[in-house]
Amino acid sequence: MKNSLKKLIPYALVGVISGATTFGAINYFDGGNRDSEFSYFAPKNTDAKYASFNMAGVGDDFVKAAKMTVPAVVSIKNYSNRTSNRSEQDMFDLFFGNPFGGQPKQQQQQPPKDMPSGMGSGVIISPDGYIISNNHVIAGATKLEVVLSNKKSYIANLVGTDPTTDIALLKIEEKGLPYLNFANSDNVEVGQWVLAVGNPMGLNSTVTAGIVSAKGRSIDLLSQQSRTPIENFIQTDAAINPGNSGGALVNPNGELIGINSAISSKTGYYEGYGFAVPSNLARKVVEDIKKFGLVQRGFLGVVPLDLSDQRQVAAYNQQKKTNIKSGDGVYLIEVAEKGGAEDAGLKTGDIVTKVDNTVVSSYYDLSFAVGSKRPGDKVAVTYLRNGKSNTVNVTLKDQKGGTSFRSKADLTVTEKIGAEFEPLSERFKTDYGLTSGVIAKNVADGSEMAKIGVVDNYIVIEVNGKPVNSQKDVEKILQGYSGNVQVKYVDEYGRITTRGFKMP
Image (cartoon, rainbow, N blue to C red; front, side):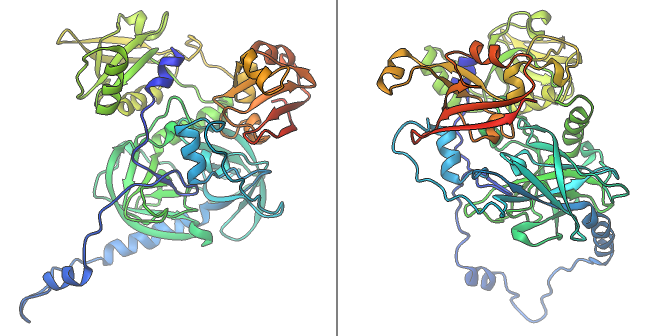
């Protein structure tokens, strides 16, 4: 099932630039000569008048909302021992290819130890110091510094992260802090006024205004950091630039409706499209992290094929010699044994078209409708089988097949350290002079393995001075262990490094 998922990850053709980190680029067409545009639309005679709009009332709302929001938005400085905020080339290498393949990348120059390697924003959501931000803002950090709008500085503890939604929760030790209330993002309307508040390009406490341009956007960004991405962004034309990531998107009442996360851009700077994680999804994630230490997420137990992605469908047809037609909905390639979908009677070949009240046109509709639920929750799944529509109730399960909540104590060793491991072939070991080693896979951003510099496809050769040749070897060494862990690994340049972390 895992291999099927890997083969079906769609190629990211539409580049998206994160508000704090470059993820890619898109092509756009320039509107032409501006002088001719303005000349063309100029009044034909002196009697012609431009339509006007009275902004006085709206302006008052903006002032009130800004006064409420600015004190609750913070600057976050990410200090790490490596460049954690990856460049565009890093992200494309990780997404499109094996870091060991092709020509090696030029090494990035490390920032001085007293300088942050990345900066972003965050939002205070409780008076006792809980702060919500983006996962990519804090990724790889060995130290996180939070600076309030009044310039007061704190060292923050990372409570937890969720790469699937790009949300992170931090905590500073303080009381009586200004904070924002979550609004119901389901009530957000296209066309309503919004403010984006953050710290773009080092400019603290910056407020920009715009409208909600669209809802429910998927931009194929989070598949670069999660195997099960959930994207249901609020799109806005309020100006968002590097450094805004993790900041607040608020309504004119100063209520939090989204966490600014990304921009669609050719240059990496604002070009008219920004994207925010809706507040309902962000709130669910941070509530789980705060209460359980990790996100409680339900799964259908299926391998999906996004019928709206023509290239993904074509690739699957070519590989499997099938003739599945593209369109709306999600085709079930595989139904996991003892999963919620199988228990409810769903089968391979069914096409999911709706979950509860959410119409499923693409994979991201399905992932949002299901992934925002918890294990044990029931959803009504509407599907097509042989052209006939059916609806069944599915009890969601976690990735381990359970329906109860899990805490950090329930995590496996690999879940705790944030990586999985695959054996090296004997031939590879012989060719490169290794006597042991496993390949790191699915390294989670912000995890213990990521913090010591390990990324996907690095080779771990020893853990606590003992050789490892399988995931079971790693689990055996660390099972029940609570001390400092020393990991010896080989990076893409062939350098052998030993670094350590405290076992969670």
